[in-house]
Image (cartoon, rainbow, N blue to C red; front, side, top):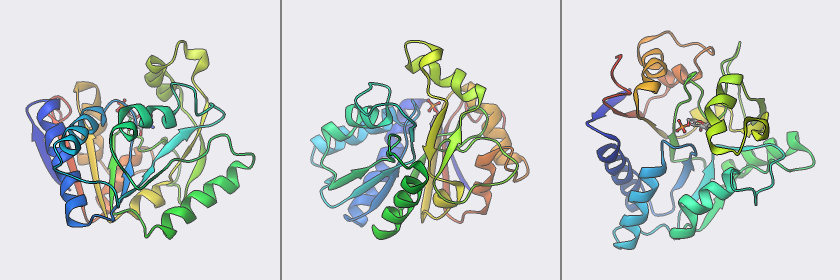
Length: 239
Ligand code: GLP
């Protein structure tokens, strides 16, 4: 793991956006794996700025997002479809953007379709990740074993508590999601994980210093050859 520590979230976002833009410049037809949550928002703002300044062009690039809630209409402002539209896709020019369909009639089939679509696109060149307070990546929650492909997951109480801030009330937070599996994430050629703030410090410590265990899903990243962690001082405070 390569670890970079930045003085604050702003400088971290500038660095992350520069790395993403460099990926696109080096390979305009890149396939990017994108993430939701608050961690990548400032990075997306930097990418939009670079695009407006004509420093990067996404017109040949394709994206696949990590996850989507189950049974939440995509028009709902808290859906990850809506989030990505507002935070990034409305402002840049990707050739195509994909998210799992959490409203598919046959969710298992949708999981298989999503993995096949990633494969058909040539696989993910660079996957962007955040990390949950319990060490989850995508929506792969602590478990007894690591998941393989895209799957339906039951959200843990800690994730529901963490994500309720985006919803009018806790009751409205969906209890399930479709998420790329650990195997899907590990198939990406490069991985870049962003973490900011002291409330991520314990999960970051477990990921960096602890054993590889499905009880802390992000720990699997030790087995990937090209992982870069971008941390601010708060997130890095326990390593
Ligand atoms: C969500 C997302 C993850 C994200 C995590 C952390 O549950 N599914 O992809 O990394 O939460 O979110 P945040 O960046 O808001 O702390």
